Structures are given as structure tokens and as C-alpha cells.
Image (cartoon, rainbow, N blue to C red; front, side):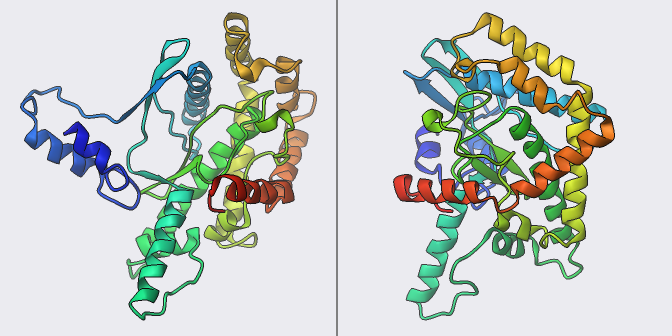
Length: 319
């Protein structure tokens, strides 16, 4: 069973393939232990010669943010995943089921276009976009409600991760490190660069978080109601995190004291810089307006576009 799952990784439990719930049923039916009441199937990445302590720290932070948003009854969504550091250079990382990276999604869509052309058909789009995927997957409902709800879920997750990426300065946000669920929500993974360290230690990704034009197009553009809701959710999430700044700072401070050798603590003034990002010296209204400005600056940011181009040229990751 395990060998087959590895071989079928591109199609099982992804946003474009077999649902993870169906995979579980299929494997359970074939497993000699499937009759046990507590039987469970999970996907794990086994890391060797790789320090996953920072990844574990990042997921602890994301879990904390998720709890803060839930307690405030905000419609913001995060997907923390489990990470276990077993030694200084090994560990286990949970794979998020029913997801595909934006890179993988685009690759799959381009392959479909090429197949259509090979058959002599005219593809609906020469360069498929994330909006096209939403239309194809959720647009079959005549009322349009399925598509609308999927886009709302998408916007709520985009807002939540935007707040986290800004406050924690999570970098290396190319399309291989951002996943999309079958529900339409996005999930960020791979937190090797955060707080003070960045790719090449040059902090090229200047925007508060990644908000490409393509991402906004899914919501209907900057003038759409959903985009305005997205901005409102983003500001609300930032203000709620700001109200719990002491709790977040404490987790970072405790980790810094216990594991000062983590790459994310390489720079100076880790705690001071994080505290500054909460805008605690401003009134609530001033802080809200400041973050609203950061959202505006993040849209179609030049540095974000150039980083995506760099990743495409050097690593083949689709923009």
C-alpha cells in the first residue's frame, strides 16, 4: 500500500486528483488492520540530514494565530500541519491532504492545454490562470453559489496567511510553497525563511506578503466586493493578532532562549523588530490604516513579480 501511494503521489490526496477520503477508504479496505476502530492513514515526509526545528517552530506559531482568530470568531482560516523534530538533523512532516501547489496546478493545466491542441481542439485559455481553475472546478452550479463560496474560502485563507506572513516575515513565497485545497483555500508550507533570515540574506521580497494580480483576479479584481471583504478581513486579523502581541512575542522569546541557533534568529533585534510590526505605539485606528496601506502596497508588487521570475528561471517554478 505504501509503495503504491508513493508511486501515485501526484494523483492521490491532491486538489486535482483522488480525494484523500477516498484514498483512505481504498487503503483501509485492503489493509489487514482496517477493521480496527482507531485505524488511521496519514501522509508523512521523512526528513534525513535536514533540521526541521524551525519548521516545527513555524507551525507552532501558525497554530497560535489560528487559535487567536477562532476565539475572536473571525472568518479567517489557517491550516497548521504537524512537524516532529526527532533529532538535530531529522524529523517527520505531515503532508497536507487534498492540496496541490500553485506550481503543480499550473503545470497540470498547461498539460491539459497541450493535450487539447494535440487533438486539434481550441483551449479555453492559452495560459490558464488560478481563476480558470476556480471556474472549472466550482462553476458548474447554475446558481453560482458553489463558485462564490469557494472564492470566499479562498479570500479568507489568503487574508489569514497574509497577516501571518507579514508579522513573521515569512519569505520564499514562490508558487511551489503555496498550496490550494480542493475547497479553494490556500495553504502555505516550507518556512525555512522567516523573521530575520531570507533567501540569500538580501530580503528581496519587500512586500508585506504575496498578493499577485492573479491572486486578486480570483476575487474579481480590486473593485469587487469580495476584494473589499478580503481587505477588511486582513485588517481585522492584524488587529486581533496585535491585541495578542504579548502572547505571540512570548512564544518567540521562549524559543529564542532555548534554540538561539535557529536560522530565523541569525539577525539582530528579532524581538524588537517583531514588536515594531505590531504597531503598538499607534492607536487601533492608526494601526488599522497602516496595515491597510501594506495590503495596498502588496498588490502586484514589483519585488514579488521579480522574485517569481527569478524562481522560474533558476528552478523552473511557474509564475
